[in-house]
Picture 1: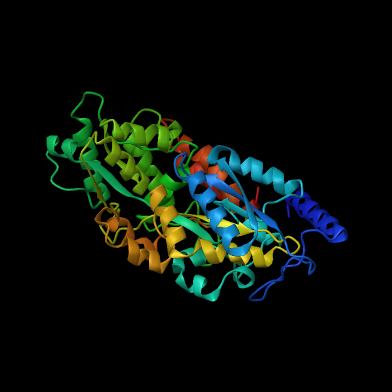
Picture 2 (picture 1 turned 90 degrees about the vertical axis):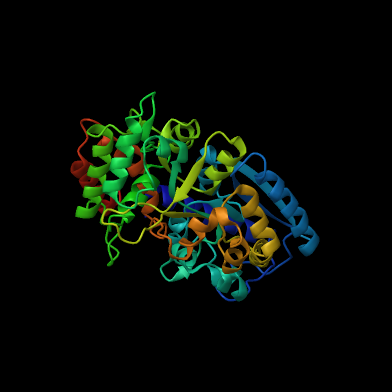
Length: 426
């Protein structure tokens, strides 16, 4: 355990002792087994949710409405704090280190907290009917050492977006299905000139691990091998990074400095302005493009190196529950309400994402614009969020892998270094 995590555990332990000694905030026992987190006195009167801001328009409104419905149903007040994705990691970490975690935290990592024994597992706070309805891939991604701690709130999957007008001008009949076809299409589009590039590549620090993931998945690679060992510098992954560098440096079919280009304010903006023929995107990008109506675009499965079955990269964020004296029943009631279709699917639709439940898949199935994502969602590939070291590995990837696609980049050396860091846990 790192010194920082030891500090978190110690702080939470002290806070729990203080609450127990004062007799406050205790009472609700655990339902469905598991550690209740202590306390069997009076009933809690409030719990707190710290939630990530997916959009300024919808996130706060949904949680405010949810809080009213929750209090009406349970008599317990739900305090809501919505924090931007830019700040939520630091602010939530500070809360936890100070011994004041929220009861529910919406974040994209959970395993390090589970490893330190700070979270309820699903047996303690999730109804069997709810867990059965969750898509298996998200149950797996939320499971650490045989128990589920990361309850999914929404999901996304990636696919290849292409500009139909640029494809037509370049004489490209259909979206590429192999890496060779992709390279050829990117070259033809770049040759149109006028500042247009074939592919907008975001290998900057915002989400470089996502861009690399979807390409390596489509080359038979992965972050970890079948025996759960890190495989960051596998031959397949090195080949993938060499391919991405070639696109940028030799073929010159990307924008300048892809290693410093972020997704939302870089690659997406370039594609949305009609200056890129292709980009890897997801359903919220479709919503933005449909609203702007500036380009005619299509969405297709990712091309694979060998022309095999396309793979997709998926993301889910989590609603994890911290053990606090007497809060287990109130937390369980939170999950019971959130996973009602009229709640969870309303939130997901408003934010433009994808479902996390089997019932949600059925409800979303009639939306043709989501078909390319929904068809692959049950078998989606995710990063190893169930490994407590992933938080550190992801940060190292975001900060360093972009250098590999520059003129002086060395894909093998970069991945070797990341492999070394992952194995050492530093």
